[in-house]
Length: 379
Length: 51
Image 1 (tube, each protein chain N blue to C red):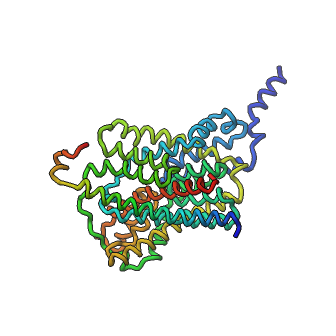
Image 2: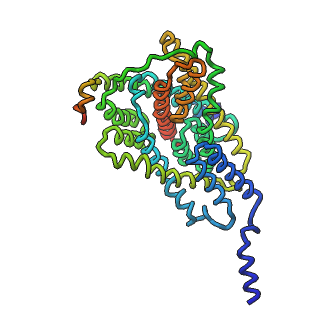
Image 3: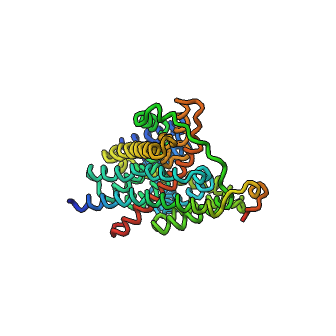
């Protein structure tokens, strides 16, 4: 009997015996993400489940990501099958107001310039020795759009999912720190003080209803591989604008988005197993992700300067920085930068337009990239 | 040139150009839709344009 008790006691502490240094480091990293989410308020909805998922998956012998493990079920169902990113997009669509973009459609082009960082980073990653599909996954961090990054990475480089999604969500939350120095560096004080005419209200309800349908058809015909993402975004927006399915809209905005965010966060955290995550490659990916978002901002602001020049000074180049997908954070950054130099300069509506353009642009860029890869026989 | 870089350059050129042209095309579509479905203040207030 004594022997049995001895075995029983030993089995209670088996986890300590199997605990590795990598596990310890990753549990600390998980705590770091929890700290950023809880204490600093950086994307808490995602960083809290990601951080906790990272802790859970690094408990030895718990088998959370083994075949049949709890987190493995979430991961296989939601991430590997690309269900979670698409469901998240329904919620995003239901929360997005495209009216500022419809008021001034030309600022949609800023949403294209804001994606150039994706492709420049792709080349940079290839130059650093990553293969083509890994480079695509790394470049997509520049979409500044978590669900899009996860969708593309789970398709082409699932082994990089942890690093790519942590980079995407971390940098999204750091947009207010990353963008302003670049915006100041690339613009003159005179340009930053450019006031833009406040758009008159000119968008009919019918236009708001037809817009998601038209965009879905046009963009999905151009890049069919982006249909799951664009289709879900526009479905969410159509439900919001048509006003006849308030229950579905509210569910998309709240229950569906919240449940999927929780499970997606846990699934991403579950990819942060110490043995797989703690490699030099991960640091390189985090560095390249930062470069991608910086390049997006650079290209957006430069395109804004071009539009400023072409319109004879009617466009404030700062709004180019909002041509990324981090909505509505990037627009708020533009507004606060504009007001820093002219307290009566109200750029928010224009920046919101560019920001929603960035959302459409990031999905379009991903869809085009996936379609071209498929066309080349690589997808 | 290494085939890998050729693929990379093709994706970059197609991606940047394709995104820009696609979004430009959407601006044209929006412009067309704005003409087709103009904003009329009175109708909006009365909710007559509801589909």
